[in-house]
Amino acid sequence: MSEPLSSTRSLATVLSAGPCVTALVSLVALFLGSDRASAQTPVAASERRGTGLAHSSTDEIVGRFRRGWTAEKGHIRPLDDRNWKTRITALKSLVMVGPAAVPPLVRGLDDENAEARVFAAQTLGFVGDARAVNRLERTLAEDKDPAARLYAADSLGMIGGFRSNPLVERIAVKDPNKDVRAHLKYAIERNGEAVSKTVREDLGRFDLSRLATAQVGKSAPDFTLTDALGRRYQLSDFRGKKPVVLVFIYGDT
Amino acid sequence: MRNRLKDFDAAGAQVLVVDPHESYRVRHLLKEAGFDSGDVHVPILADPSHTVSATYGVAFQMRIHTEWSNRPASFIIDRDGTIRFAHPAKSFSDRPTPDVLLRELEKLGRPRAE
Image (cartoon, rainbow over the protein chains, first blue to last red):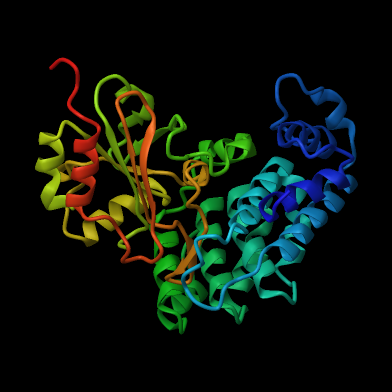
C-alpha cells in the first residue's frame, strides 16, 4: 500500500484492526470510548473504559502525525505529496476521541517539534474544551512558531467564551506576524461565540474512505454546505438539471 | 471570474465556490473585498469541518498566510453527476481561465430538452 494510508494502517495495527478504514473507524470509537460511536457500536461498553487508554491512544495518534507529517520548506506542496491525509486523519481521529484527548493535546503544546505543537493547537479548537484555554493563551503569547500562535488564536475563538483582555490586546497589536494578529482579531470578533457543534460532528463522523475520491469519470461525491447567508446547497440537487462548476478557493487567494 | 458569471449562466451551468473557513470569516472576507454578502451572485459555501475539501482531495496542502490551506482546484460535474474535468492547481496562480472552463462546459453538450 502506498504512503497515504500508512498513518491509518499503523493506527489500525495499534488497535489490532485490519487496514479497512471503515472497520478502523468503528474500532476507534469502540476502543477510545468515543461518544461519536456509530449506531451499531456498543456505546455502553466503550463508556465503561477508562480514560487511560484514550490518553495513550491520543499519544499514539499524535505520534503517527509526527512521523507522517513533513512540512515543506516552500509554500507550495508538490501535487503528488499525499501526506496531507496524515493531518486530516489525525484531526478526525482526535475529534472522535473527544474530551479525553484534551490533556494529552495540551501536553502536545510543549512538544519540542514545532509541527506537533501547531497540530495540537489546531486540533484543540475542533475538540473544543475550555480546559485548554489557559495553556493555549500561553502558546499564543510565547510560542516561537508563528503557526502555533496562529492556531492557538483560532482555537481560543473556536472553543468559545473568548474575550479580549490587556494581554490579548497587546498581542493583537504587537505580534511580529501579521497573520497571527489578523487571526487574533477574528477570534475577538466572535464575541465569545464558539464554533458550531455541527463542525465537530461533521469532522468526527467523516468517513475516511471518502478521502480524495473526487476523480474524473467518477460520480461526484455529494455534499451539503451553507453559504454566507445561511442558504443550504446540496450538490445532487443539480443532478439532471445543470452542470456544476465547483471551485475551491482559499480566502482571498 | 466574477465578471464572467453571466457567461456561465448563459452556458446553463451553476457555479459553486467552496472556502474552508467558517461562514463568519467568509462574510468578513467579502466585506474586505468590498462586497455585500447579499450582492454576491455566486454561492460561497463554507466548509469549516474540511470534510468536503478532504473528499475532493484539496485539504491542508498549501501553506499561505502562516496556515495550512486548501489547494485551489476547479471541477466540472456534468448533468448526470459525473466529474468530467478536474484541475488541481500547482500554485495559487495556476487556475483555468473562465474561457477554458466554458470550453469544457461546451464539450458536455446542451441539455436534451430545454
